[in-house]
Image 1 (cartoon, helix red, strand yellow):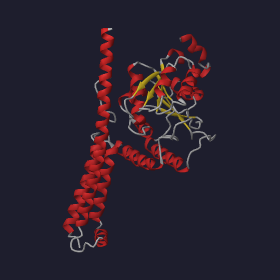
Image 2: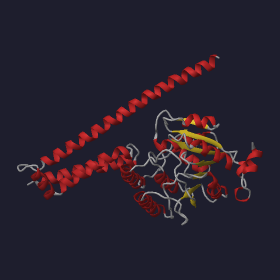
Image 3: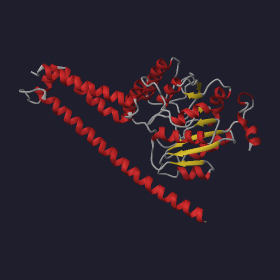
Image 4: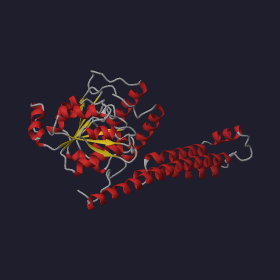
Length: 258
Length: 118
């Protein structure tokens, strides 16, 4: 397997990738139409990548499709929400000793072909977590409803003020993490819509986060998990979590391990 | 008019509720999603207690002339009902999930037994 992996890894900027144990975490909820393409694209980018599909209680054939593609399938007995689903993947990555975890959504909006750019800062040791941001560059390509964009921008502004570093896209699930990032998220990861709180958490644990401009695609199938009324609840809940979280001394509860 | 002592006591009690809820979230004993209703309850009661003219006006809408703080009781009871109803839905979901977990566990155990003996 190392031979094939080396051959497929783009040469210069990703040197050293083949020596690392790497896993792709793909949360999927009713994504039978897109998940198989996502797995194919991940393998096309890097055949040495172990693909883990976390099926968050799908009622369609997501699990079967993913298993047929040879992915590791973690089937949750019921819907945990994106936070719980993704953390299942991080726990798997942590317990199986992976060095690098890549997070790509099962709906196909994250293009694995752009993974090289997101991987780069983590591989070079510049960052513990690299996030693909829709807004870091001006090239655009991301279309979304106006209120949703406004919400994303507002959250980004607040988070930037809190962490003291410019963060443009706090809701992006297109991420690459090293072992330290995996360990943190395996121990503690926010519930519901986790990325905003997770971003603040990363900084409070003095991990280094770098944003990389990416262009996201239209969703391939399924539907967004965020509706209008929910996004209001989401905003309020996330803001509450962030502000209360600032008053925690031990951000992560210390459990046995480590 | 609402007795001043009632307004002060009401405001202090409601605001204490808000502080307790915030502390529970901070110490991770209460999740944000379950805390929101309590915060809305606490903040609404704090506002109604402290804003005496407002309480009188609202009491007037409902024809309560003799004792405006009755509105505080009514609002408090309303919120308690909503919180309880919310908890009932949460408990229902939890017991559904518990059934699924137990069933999955039984199937897993059976599969393990088959593998061990086979």
